[in-house]
Length: 123
Image (cartoon, rainbow, N blue to C red; front, side, top):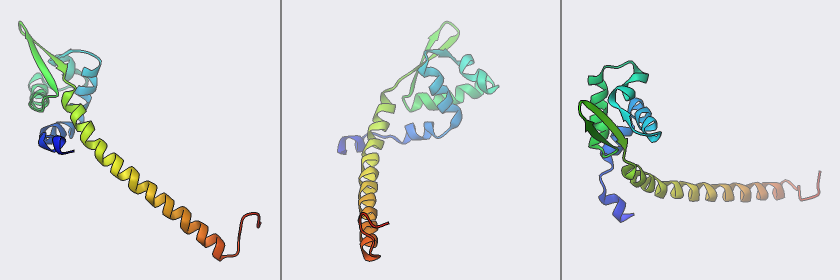
């Protein structure tokens, strides 16, 4: 976990915090797209799309390639993998806590059943 803490995930989570940028990343998962193709589902200007793309680039989530006058964007999955790894630590933390809670509830339920005089086979 120490190694993951050294990585600045703030820009990644900032970039992922916007639905438009998440959709752009999902589109890029299917392959490279031009800025125009990324902007198309949102009916936004190329300038507005470019602002979103700059945020994604700043987070390292995409790479822009310039082919003559066309800007082609490619997904860079490395920062997503690091964010997933970081979140995985907390997923394990909460799963362990929920398992503990489930065990405690089952024990309490068993004690309540014994206290009320209901045992197995009593119905």
